[in-house]
Image (cartoon, rainbow, N blue to C red; front, side):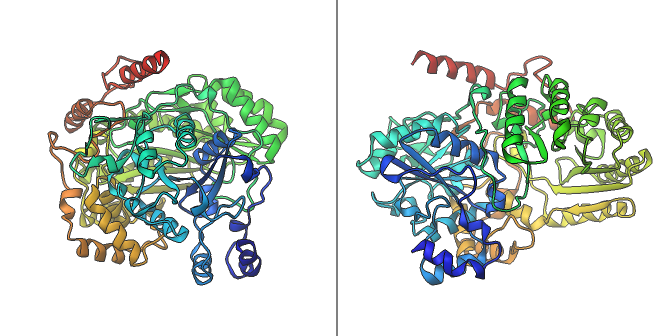
Length: 596
């Protein structure tokens, strides 16, 4: 039925390649030969989801198990969605065109808060009840993972379970549990899952702040799972060749995970600690084999701070030598100013120069100290000069506005940094300006999110640089909703649901986002927006306090106080330990798992 529907309707939609599957290197198995069938949903379009390395890693890990078949699922665009609803076609997998309702497990990646209405849309389109308590024993279990799962409460009524932390190892335990409990009642299966470290099952917790377990057997704190050795995380050489151009159409190689630079606004820098590096020879082997089997002409080395890899110069030198005859360009997304030297500039300047990207974040040294962005004006100038000597003429600079303690002087500093780039000789300068959003599990989780009128004021000041730079501002209204969802609790789910029911969808797309739908939803839900966007007390119970990411709340409080005094904290990889707690937690967890 689904194949017939596609055959009759693909010529009526934009980009039919999103829905056909059949790509080279996709995994197809005999359904009669597997025990567990999994649908991996990335709640966005094909070209966005296929750019996500995490999805491909989990896809490969699961399909390495003979008794498990994992298939990909992406959200259709509005034209296809309309046709599916008209013809009563439920959301289906890409590989076998199987309706999601027929699967055992649905895994949904939560990469950004503004995808929450997409999540509801995917379930609704699949004919799966949005509320977890309305699902029956015949419905698949619905589990979420990804960075947004570290504050799971906004969607706690939607998901049967959340994976907290890295997924490569815990997903094996999840499917193992599902095989053992197949045929049992839904609650029994969820109870078995709740005993796996790193799994949070909301129905076993009271909707308090923070949630408390209803029984002694449910853990009080959910400990984040950490993949111990990235060298054991195998990404397939035979990567899926997409049917159409992707948002990030290139080979992506993860070189390390975690960051200890300690930027106080950065959630990823907290929740992905400790730093774990991949061996340089493994990076080289993975890069070359992936390039040879796909034909891609760009290779990106991915991590939170790639230039901080302890052997980055060796890696780049070997890659340049090995790829010289292949016409491949190397890229390092968003490089730190204090890690970028001439050797890196020369390594990433071969073949095609698409532009360099740096993230100073703030316009003055004082404010960079507040946010613990340990880069100086000297670092900035030296980096730009090194890049210019290597032949670069274009540079993109990332900044944020609305940061804690920010003043007009700090905003004017952004103008001055743009002028410095022009003085060094860059012909094209782009300023990309985001709005600061306090995130859970960061030192700035206690901070106020600045109101719309302040962000508008900040934009007016930065626009004075329009004669020397192209300036891109992030929509303040999108940031307002993201801030609400980032530090939300279960009460906020009503806002998400009402926004979705009113037609809110693809909210992460600026040309689609409709603030009026969210405004109406907030008014109907009668939530106190100031509670979620305002300053939090350091001794206040937070809706995510039951999630243990390894970094202690006391450390976050200490960092918050240091921020208000503009005192920096050095990188613990090269200096002293600052007692964040993650290493002790990691080692204790490792010893416990080894002893078992």
